[in-house]
View 1 (cartoon, rainbow, N blue to C red):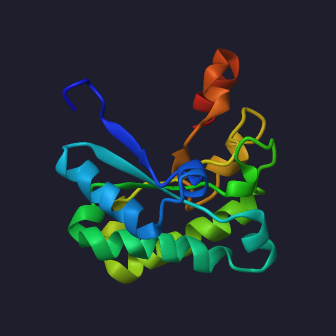
View 2: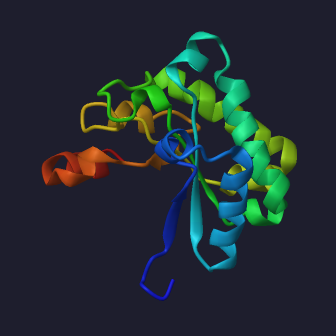
Amino acid sequence: AEFGVSYVLVGHSERRELYGESDQLIAAKTAATISSGLTPVVCVGETLAQRQEGKTEFVVLRQLNAVVQQIGIEGLEKCIVAYEPVWAIGTGETASPAQAQEVHAALRNRLQQLDAALAETTPILYGGSVKASNAADLFAQPDIDGGLVGGASLKAEQFNAICASA
């Protein structure tokens, strides 16, 4: 916070895969982020193999539940959740709006089970190769509250078009 930072990505797939960060470590990092006065953007997502095995919902809810177990509802009120299908990050592949909505709805439902107000107020972003060409369709889904934009944020024209879609 002393450097003007407000948000911290926690649980990004590259950290999980390249550095072996477990759900429990992600939960501990989320707690540390909150205690530092910053807002964690908690990333959840499945690999292509997990999707093909029909485990998407199981994986993302397991990842979210680990965070909830560590920080509770009060802590989760200070978080943003981002669904990032691992198979779509940096590959040019994107979940269809229907696929993304299905996962976002499962996440929102889990939040609803925990606390109705929490389900209404917690932003759930989509972060799997958001581009100018797909942003409007993704953002039109009822449970997608915005985007976590990676590579497209480095191209001003692309990023401006994504912002306009929001």
